Image 1 (cartoon, protein in one colour):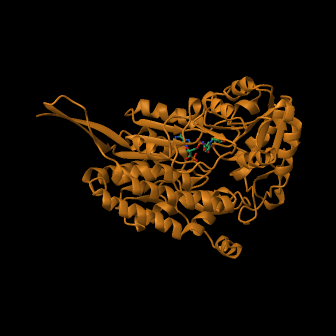
Image 2: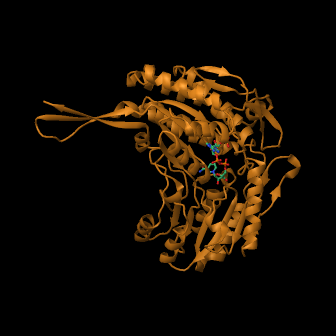
Image 3: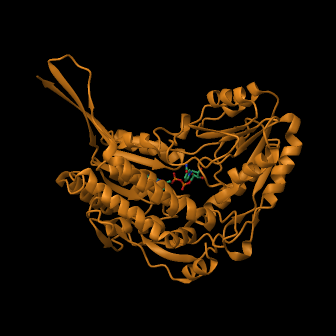
Length: 494
Ligand code: NDP
């Protein structure tokens, strides 16, 4: 990563982005435009089109037409594969441009953004491109006088609603398998991080994806997102974001065509440290990175640190030391480890959580405040709060910011009980040298992902999905393909 190249890219003005509908770049319609504020310094970076219900309907109609006429859904798998592989290559070729554009929009530190955004997105698109011609139908074990065939068909029009924390990575988790299976897609980026995803969609057209197969509409969730959710012509809705919006999407589906809805909703993931962890220094550094990278704005962030009481004080000091050593600031510097919080709204919410935590008896060990205010950007010191009661707000509610709550435990049983004491179940970790205990933790803690002696980093070969109010259905791995196909039985009398 070259700082000079990054600085040159950040000096360039950012053009206004409109919608991408039916292969056309469209400017703002009656809805006008919305300012895009950069969290780096609070200035207006550019504008995006403020989409309307009719913009969304036009995009859905274009996707439907493309699906029905078979320009993509009817292509041989090898042809679809070729286009998707080209798209992955183009994403890689434009990696720095995409990463810098994304960071200017959402504030993630560039070192992480480059890897987790274009790098991961290209890998995901390539993975599903390679997978698509290995998806076979089935022959059922029937009596001799019939033949039962199970076909795997694309579902039709997929609506994808993407959050602001990792627009390319999460976008690719939805677009990759949806397009690979022959569906048409309409995507709605978050209004606080649209730019890089819009650019990545443009590259899909450049790669040869036929017009109308992938449409993208910018604008407010409550307007264009709602129009997508209530559409009678979207067959599957896939989403990552908050539980509140997830609930609305299920309601929209019930009120319209009962479309399938798959939700990935974040969590309150426990990182559990036993006194017999193989390397407590390493565990402390990973615990700090596991919550604070991307300013804590990671769905699987290890936001609850559960520490065996006998090592509590020593371990918390080690995590605080590792935290204080992390460089917070300008996300476009290659050595920054914690960038900006995505928006003023998120920053205010984070500071509110700190206040509530202290009102509820927590003690701030480090951080707790806004920093670098003179830049105009939204920066917060990484914050550790100890003495967090299991029923405290900080132990129960997703913050989605750089705040770690610490709670001690006395036994393995208590650790499992605490770990399972929220409505969420996305990710977690246990650190121990005891192999049997490690397996008991994997079985006992109710999450979609359990790490042992590490935190994060699971690649595209394994599923990511939650239980409880962390959502349903999985992104990543071959299992994700199931969301984007219908099973169809052919029952043939011989
Ligand atoms: P939202 O759930 O509101 O946003 C996620 C996406 O949903 C965005 O594209 C948003 O659009 C869209 N959206 C919002 N309202 C509607 C609606 N009525 N119908 C359809 N789509 C809608 O999350 P926020 O951005 O408000 O963040 C709030 C909290 O959500 C965070 O603090 C965090 O706790 C959680 N979150 C979790 C994420 C995860 O990775 N699991 C990611 C992001 C947030 P728009 O941006 O235009 O409003």
